[in-house]
Length: 260
Ligand code: IP8
Image (cartoon, rainbow, N blue to C red; front, side, top):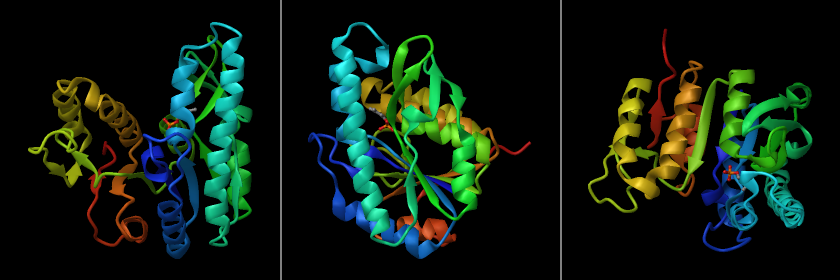
């Protein structure tokens, strides 16, 4: 089984509220169909979730009743994005079913507390493609908080031990620094967990621009520690996802699962 995350920046325009990238998502759906693999799909919230979540400080937990409306509005928007992704998959005759995190799991101070893994297992065993996504969820300590697609990737990787974990990004993969701001950034084709440890240290010196990247590296390291290989690839380029899924050589960053 392959666990794939379609990043929010690849399926939406992160700078524009509620801007779904239909063409890119449709092409990625067709590549998933063509590869014909067993898959659990996770997607990010992009501009359907992050703008509202920030506006209402939802990740800080319950502070006032105004946030309740913000919570339900944010959920409605990420659910809407999820419906757009599902339609794209259904158009390719993929039997995708939506598994919304807010109804399946609880966090406790941002960390996983309870999760209904069985529902994923049952749908998979019947031949469906479970699709889940970054969502607002209940939180034992905070009242509510945000469950990111990356956290879902870690939880699902730990439980299902997939053959590979794929992150579909709007970059070719990992770089030694942020390629959008640093022209000396070097592309990383292959890395071990140890090499990633060094990378975090150096990328932290780039402050806020690489904060997102540092978080992503943390997620990748946690999955790599489960001895699962992680591949990061560019979803904007034709067939990178397909080639990676079928094991064909293509440009991507390959992180080897930690060997013991
Ligand atoms: O885009 C965030 O999920 P992500 C979810 O995977 C919300 O980080 C609701 C902002």
